Length: 77
Image (tube, rainbow, N blue to C red; front, side):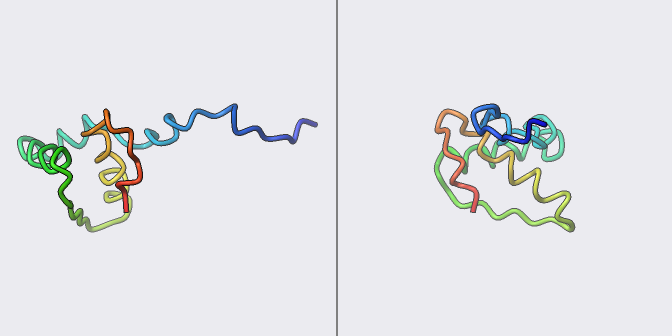
């Protein structure tokens, strides 16, 4: 019976990326994805609205991937 849990066994970056795809975001918004990317680079606020939480949450989780070099997941609020 191995009931011990170790945080070092899990990769935090993989958890942050789970369930969100930059490719699906770009395919959904098309050319307008450039506007989102521009806003993220310029550190502007972005409002995301959706009809359901199942649609909203993956789209919000993908936003930090536009500025991956920052490695700042605290921008999701």
